[in-house]
Image (spheres, helix red, strand yellow):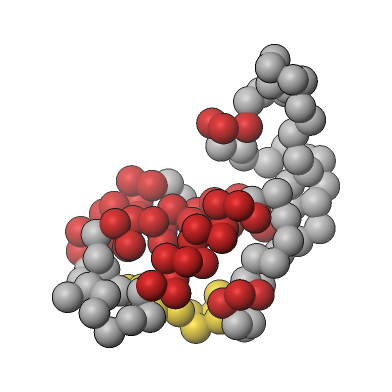
Length: 117
């Protein structure tokens, strides 16, 4: 799956989702041709001319991971993960730190027995 529509279809087909071998998603930032979200702008934001943060190669995957977690959470579909590191170390630094903190909070909420009922 590569886009939000793919994750919507996955959630339409399954009542529980198991995701294994999730690697640590943090990577060193580097300015390269990486897909950016609509919130990033093309080159600079006119209001303040802020510089875009350097993204790592893993940040494309991080955005997809965030989209999957959001879709599962919004639809109350339990998402079970097997990861190479603890949840709080999946994405410990990088340009997507703020949105990933929300994702981490959602993953923690999914740990409760009442989730998905």
